[in-house]
Image 1 (cartoon, rainbow, N blue to C red):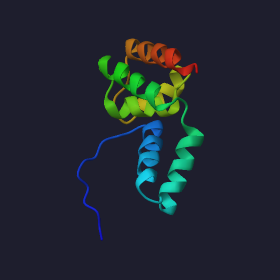
Image 2: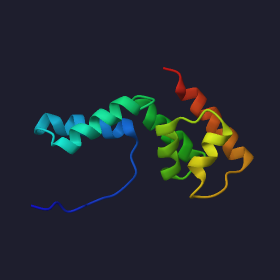
Image 3: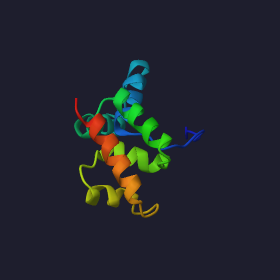
Length: 110
């Protein structure tokens, strides 16, 4: 039975992990879900709470949600890494770069 997509929006790796943990409570995960959860656990740079706070702060600074999710997943440490994340959206201003890097630095420490 095919499933119908009801909603589509970008989510960070910590959010993916949390969603799959929740789904695992109800039923056994299929192979792809298990692999996705393993990947999310391995590569998430922050926990779900910090990821949500970081994305909220970035969006409040007028950073597009798609970019905020990418930033949360990658946690760029410098301008070069950050520019790559903005590449398909727009060229970030120096003010945007500074804001994002300062915000990431604040949330990057566990």
